[in-house]
Amino acid sequence: MTEEEKVQLAALTKRVFEGEELAGQLKELHDHLKAKDRRAILPAPADNLATLYLYSCNLNNTRKKKCFKRQIFASAEDCLAHVRIGDGYGDGILDGEDHEIRIKLVFEEKPWMLKFQSAILSQVAYTSSSKRPKYAEELKNSGDDTTESLYEVLISDEAIESFPQTLALPLKRVVKYDYQHFYDVNKTNNSPDCDIFADSVSMSSLFVETVSITSAERRIQMIENYSHEFFHGKNAEVAHIKDKAKCSSYEEKDVNNQLYLSRHVHEAFDGINTVPTNTPWFAIHVLSYDENKVDCPKIGPDAIVESPFIKRQRCNVSICFYNEFYARDYAKYLRNDSTQLDATTYCMDLYFEDAKKAKYYLDWKEQKTRLKWEGRN
Image (spheres, rainbow, N blue to C red):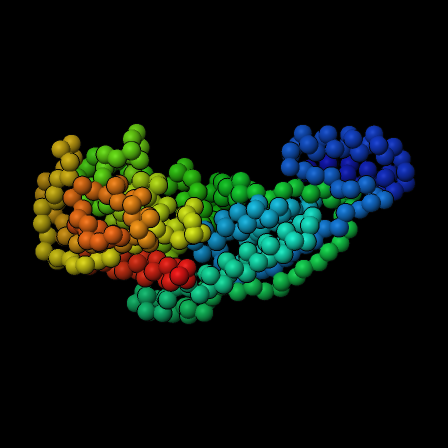
């Protein structure tokens, strides 16, 4: 809403209480707001004001948590949350100081507000118990003395209120689309605090780095059959093994921290858009690795060996699925040279420039994944 529209709205509110041209002015404002935003909802007439229920809180140390903000927007949409237009709180879910997320949403019915509160409490409890980073040793090795307590997810300044809606502040639904808009704006402004891949990139392939899979050097870091349906007319996505938000600048660019996956399998690996919520459907366990380098194997008759002199270190891994259901659903997409070990486990070789570094990243990812599985069992 522009400043001019706010002035018009305030003037209308004054005329309403003075009894001037109520019906005509309300219709004019209603039509204008609907044209500007189809989710805008005018409040009830002055003699029968609706009761609104407000939920607000600060979520400390959450902006670096993978997909945390996206999940809040999803819960807000599911629980029919609204934001008051002109309240100065944007979409009702904003970035605060010190990597916190601030929430201020209103609901037309109390049960929906309580359901949203339960969703937030559940998300915080699950994140704190199952996703809390065990950073102590990693930070020590990197020379960073930041303590692990900095990353604990906490709720502060929680408040629940009820109040009558006024004509001065119409309502607007909060939906997941608002989150994508938030990301687009921050990306355009090149904000250093933008939640990038750690929070939003997996929502859309527009923001994921992709690479061609015609080269042999890429195919040897793929767990999928390069010719299956998910790659028809598409490149592979660069999937960071260690979460990008947890990486140093060096780790973020390290090719040993990358796999090349299809969109569908990438989401399953990271637990994006999955059920149970945010639960990866498979983990990769390192069985063994060789420090001696071998010639890069040529996977597929059409593979292009960009440099015949490049050698790689072999890393023997097992693909461990969450349960038999997901194993049946996804095993058909694995490379043809994979070997089934049991109902949920498949084995294959991957090749990296430095297999020891790759093992570090894969071990890190497996630990996080299994913690999430334990939280669901």
